[in-house]
Every structure is written in structure tokens, then in C-alpha cells.
Image 1 (spheres, rainbow, N blue to C red):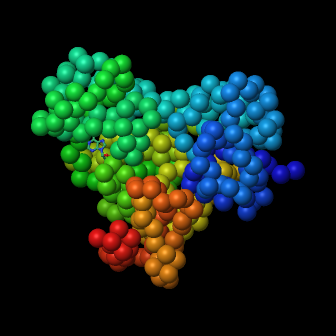
Image 2: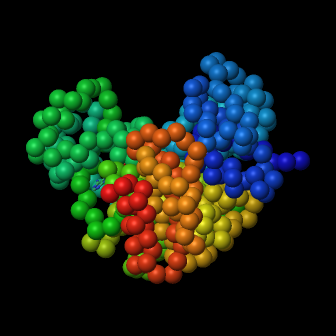
Image 3: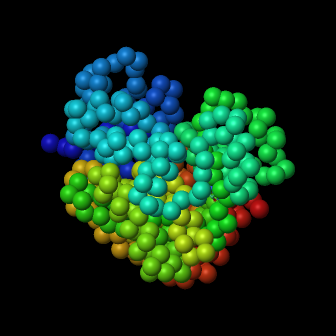
Length: 368
Ligand code: AMP
């Protein structure tokens, strides 16, 4: 009998995980909110729209009685997943997902494990905002506790605009105010953990952001010391083991004066691991699917060096991205400004060559 996986969400991450699971014989259903755009997963499995006041039992039946439920995003209904967990395993477990749904909870959790992060304050009222502005190094990053990602729902507070931001905000609302970290580079660590506790790591990836959103990745990140790799992996191992986390996880970090500070945890496959679909023996997507279905994890050995360019609100034709070691992935979404429409991966054996190819494709795609 075929293994059935329910994916919560229907975006490009759900698409790429399904495309990793279907060739090994798995079936999928996708749990979506009313009105959610399902274009990325149409034809990849059954689409099940959430209904108000439905019992978990009835929803589980409508999902096709999956063997396991997993997620493509962190903004999920924890109570719903906890209820569904009575019928089948949910990986990562709802308790782990809850830790990363709210930035404040996430930061407190990381602090409890002695993992270095940027100094921050909780901001739940005007007085706390004033205090944060007076105390923290500027520019201050003011991030919404929930529903914020890729620089959305954020303000950068400087001496010049502090008054303006204060006037814009209305309370009650929940924020974390974070000191600016004068980092030299940003890197991410990706790992998959199986039910039995085995962990595989991808090498650290170097990331560049534009307006808070990832634009390019380079894997393996050049010039990361053995000590930094080992420190990052120790942090991530500690996180997944503490939470009995099963699946793929990403830890985004700042490197500042040689030290690693964790910015954010994504309890799912991550944009900074997309290169692995073409650049590693086992992609992050397949390793997630393997982990949640209790298969042995696949090798994370690299084919060479990979570079990834995100297509944000822009696209490229197959012809424009058709060089020998260049691979285009489009998600099939409609075009909207800043929307993640696809990415390009370039493989090679020379960092400078890959960087210059990424730059040429970037100019072409963004018409700079
Ligand atoms: P986030 O939404 O937390 O993932 O932030 C998006 C990007 O904004 C990060 O990848 C950084 O480039 C930048 N950023 C966020 N927080 C800070 C900070 N405290 N100091 C410096 N840059 C930051």
C-alpha cells in the first residue's frame, strides 16, 4: 500500500517536496485555507480545503487518512495539528513548530540553550517601544512576533525615523525590537533529523539578501572555519535533539567578528537549500520526505560548488538559463512584485566563475 503524506500548505516548498516524494511512490494531499492559491500543487495530489467547525476525525478522513502530516511553513494552526496528531504522526511535532511560530518564544528558547542571538526587547506597548529605542544599537529591527518573514512586517528604526515609526504603530500589537548586528556575512545551516535521531548536515551556505529577502546563495559557503562549522552544527544539533525534531530544519545566522549569532530558525525546507536539488546527492526536499516517513536519510555529499539566484517578481526563459550547468526551476505562479516565482541553480568548481554567472543572470532577470 502506498504511503500517503499530507502537506500543510500549497506553495513552492510543498511543490518541491511533493516532487521529491512522488518518484519514490508516495501520494500527497494538501491541506489549504479557503481561497488559498493552489497553483503550485495542482495535479500533485488531492487538495483539501479547511472547513469551519469540522471535527479532526472528519478532516483526517477527508485528507485520505494520511500516514504522516508535515508542513511547508511555520505559520500553522498548532491546535489543529495537535488534534490531527491523535490520528497519525505530525512531523515536525506541533510542540517544536510552536517554538518557532513566534519570534519572542523562539528567541527565549534559543537563549535557554545558550545560543547567541542579537540583544532584543519584547515590545507590547508604547513604553516598551520607547525604552527599546533609547537602549538598543541603531538601526533597530522591529519585527512582528508572528506572521513576519522575508523582511515583511518589519521596521528599521534609525534616529531619523524613530518618531515616524512610533506614530505608525498602534497597540495592542506584539513586536520584538532587535539591535542591529554589524555582520560581515550571513550563512545558514541546514540539517535533517530522522525519527531515530540520526542527523545529516549540509555544508553551511552563504546568503545575500535584498530588502530582507534572500536573493543569492553559495554552497558550500567559502572560508568558513572548521570551528565555525562545528559551532553552528552543535547549536543546531542541540535545537533538534531538545525538541525531538523530525524533518529538515534551517538555522539562519550572522557571522560577526568571527562569531556566529543565530537570526532565525525555519522549521522546514528553506530557500537557502534550493541549490541542493541540483548540487547534492540528496536534496533537502527528499531528505525531509525521508525523515518524516522514517526512511534512512540520504547522503548530503555535494556534486561541486553551487550558486542559486532567486527570481523575485521576475522570471527567465528556459533559453536564457540554458547553459550546460545552469538549471531553471519555475514554480508556475502568477507574477506579482517581489513574489518568489522561481530560482536558478548554477553548478561548477570555481567560486569566481559561479559568482560571475550569477551576476550575469541577475542582470538579465532584473534588467539592471
Ligand atoms: P529576518 O526577517 O529576520 O529573516 O531578516 C531578514 C534580513 O534582514 C536578514 O537576513 C538580514 O539581512 C537583515 N536583518 C534582520 N535582522 C537584523 C539585525 N538584527 N541586524 C542586521 N541585519 C538584520
